[in-house]
Length: 210
Image 1 (spheres, rainbow, N blue to C red):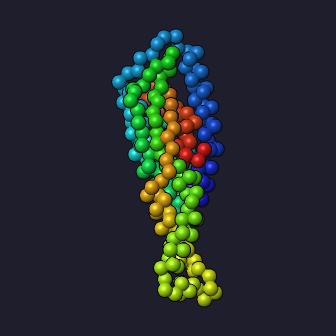
Image 2 (cartoon, one colour):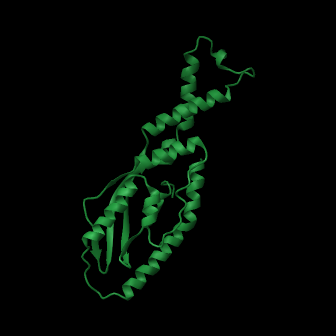
Image 3 (spheres, rainbow, N blue to C red):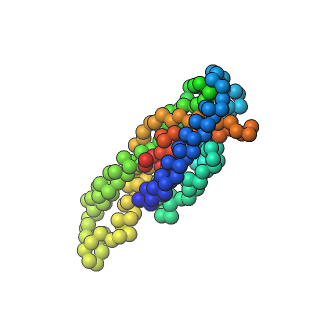
């Protein structure tokens, strides 16, 4: 799938994002007094902005909140129409739940949330089987099934594509979903808040294919 190629391009920078974050965290810890941190209202507001953008499927906005302003390439969409449908359905499927504001651990501030999203692999796993079922139904409904065949006696490619699109539409209308917990750290630098994502959050930004 085109979507998997786009996701693979993201993984090349995921490690760099986490590495930069760990360095920053260590530096902050070494240069901060040991005390219990109480998150400010600004921190809570920022965390809600990050989660709101994630739930809206606005990955470009989420990327803009990430510490170090990494370029994950998530503004690129698949070239194929099928890939675009899958990607848009994936972003529309995201739902975020959190009952808690930010919390402090030592000198660090974190936000945790539950994120439900479409499992692309599972949703598409039976696509070919469903297309085959639709073809059988269409042939059975014909008085003369041979009329659907091409001159070479084979199923025309146009009909195959039509049935595949129908099967895809059905799959995306009732997708398989998965729920994951994400935790991102909030970092304040030069009066600006930034989010340092964990691997689970980065996986979601890459289409849940990590």
